[in-house]
Image 1 (cartoon, helix red, strand yellow):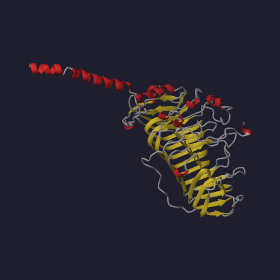
Image 2: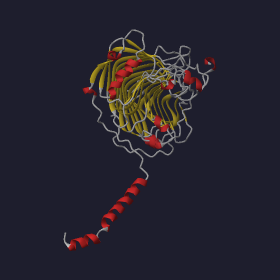
Image 3: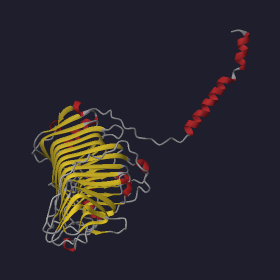
Length: 508
């Protein structure tokens, strides 16, 4: 090296030390900086179940019709899905299980029964968490899950438990039956499945989902009462992130009713409720964005309420086509934060005159929502007011907190009491057929000046004369893409539906 070069090197000896010092400061800054909160990044890389490996529950020791406990065999078989997507065959026959079959971190699962019947028995250990199956994907990699060809029969557990509990602690000693709980799915499909003799629903509970397809499903003798909100519902769709679509088609659901009194029946048919919103830490919420529900070609009988939306974070869009139901209420919405649009077409409703809450009746009931952000519309439908033991529905069409509901080409039969109460009802090209004891001059009752009943575009028939509304156009479905969700002012405020937990004196 030349002398001149050596001199330059000696003069610049401090540069490497300076660089090291700067790097040290940067490192300490990064080290001491508060780590930002972790966000869940959801992917869709889970294996497709169309490529699933085929196995049989019999390979793991399950034998139908032998009366022995097959819970271990089912659980071991489903655990194979923790390694890769599997298709689990369940040969025809009856299988007994004695505990919840629970498997998490599933990669993909297709349960394919051949008319198999699964009869779970609740061991009465923390019964609110008892399910025949709890099947969980992972929160960062949503999975495909399909269930078909099985029956879940809850008849090994007590059946008629209506109002046998003395206080809330008895709830934890009550051997109720729930069906299938599923979390973290990008595609959940349940079809050709039967649920029967289940006290304490739900048959299907889903949380953190994107697409749900429930079709060709039968519920027979399934439901419960409303002492707590935790049971008595047929389908329960809980919270999720991002947008989601739920399709329910060709479902026949007949609720469990009490043998002691016909007034006690199932609580709710289909529920959409963001249950995670009850967590005090908002960072843990599953913040729903836009959720679309399509309910078609289905029957829901003997539930107090057919459809229910409550405590949601995002926007909700509900479509019903060709639905028949026997219930005290058709649709209840409470505490919805975002936009709500409900559109029903070709619905037949038999309104029951009784139930455990003497306040809420009618087709539409809403509470605690911004009336500027919702619309409730019924088209080409029929509402029958049933008269049972001399009693009829006190409110037929609208009841609630400033609800505005519009009925198009809809027929109301045997209206005996109020048509509209504490809300606004608009009747377009519709027909209201009054019963013998109806008061034509008192079909509405308002708590505020802005509430009204508009019958100017409809026909009101006196008792003894009935007509039917003509069919009108079928409106398009309601849905949304990428709609913004408004900020929630008080997200933890409960929605009070005025439930009465106390039974009548003759039932105690």
